[in-house]
Length: 196
Image: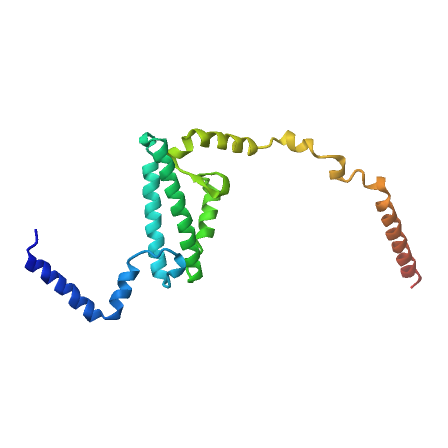
C-alpha cells in the first residue's frame, strides 16, 4: 500500500504535468473517452481507434456467445449487445469515410456477401453463435431457407414460352407491317442505285 507522502507526490506530479501541457491536457483527456456520437469525433486517427475498440468488443462478445450453456436469456442479451455494437460500428465506419478514410461499410458488405458469415433476421438484426440455435430463431430461418431454395433447371425452363424465342412475333401483325415498310424502302434505294 502506498504511503500518503507517495500519493501526494503522485498528485503533485499529475498537477505539474497538467500545468505544463496547458489547455491540451484537457483535450487529450477527453480524447481518451469514446464519444457518444461518432459525429463528435473530429480526427481520423481517433475515429480509427474507436472503431478498433468496438471491433474488439464485438469479437469478445462473439467469443462469449459461442457458449451454448449460458442460458437462453443470457444469449439473447449478449446477442442484443453485439447488435448494438454492430450499429455503433456502422456509424463509426461512416464517420471515418466522412473524415477521408476508407469506406469500411462497403468493404464489409462485400466480404459478408462473399462469405455469408452470419444469419440476418428482419430489420438487419443479426444472430451470432449460440443465438442461431434458439427456438424462435430456428423457425425464422427455416422459413427464410424455404424461400431461398435454389431453382432447378427444369423449373426455369417451365416458364419459358415460345414468345421468349420470338416464334409468335408475326401473329399480331405489327412485325409484318414493319417488314413491308423496310423492304419497300430497300427496293426504292436499290432502284435509285441502279439508275445512277
